[in-house]
Length: 230
Ligand code: PGA
Image (cartoon, rainbow, N blue to C red; front, side, top):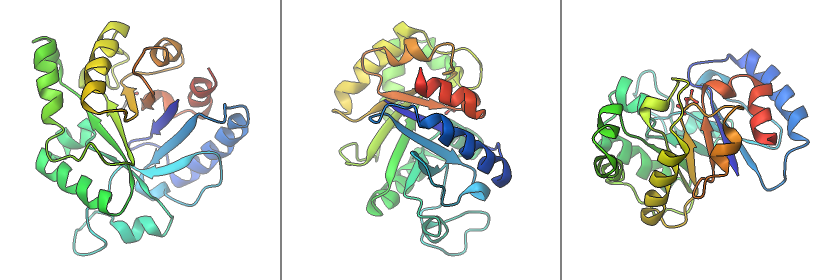
């Protein structure tokens, strides 16, 4: 299983150091085949020792240059970061990243051989239209994306389940993952959206779920490790 923590705009460099220390102590008991990722805010990126991979939540598709407020490949290379989240719904929505921009970012980091966790997900009004509308919406988020890329993990995150405390139901996750799996070959497929210690077991037991991308419940090292060790 894959367990990925997305800190979003939470934690500082200092609190991340404390977090990593606690996580490392807990991870001593994890199954060797389980993989752990932590996606840190840019100010907390560093070289951390431990049985996990550090990724960036975002970067600009350039080595360096005049892109005020952004970080590029050069800044990531300083800390040996080779993993990136692309297409998260918060970036699409709040930062106005279009599918075209997302695809441009994807192909830049693909060329750099980064491991990419690519996020897709539908808003509530689409989910309410029914399954066909959901799949049509999700498939449009693969536009310009090379789903044959070797170092690709996909995360299905229904927007209405993110940060709301209300996860999608087992049935919703199961049918959506089953349909997505047909399109994405055998790429690992994560579920994200209010995954937490209380529902982790039932989520990871769903066929077609290869792991979880966790926001809120990952902010506390003991809650996140509880999920990993469950
Ligand atoms: P959540 O966030 O676990 O707080 O719902 C998930 C995500 O946005 O990746």
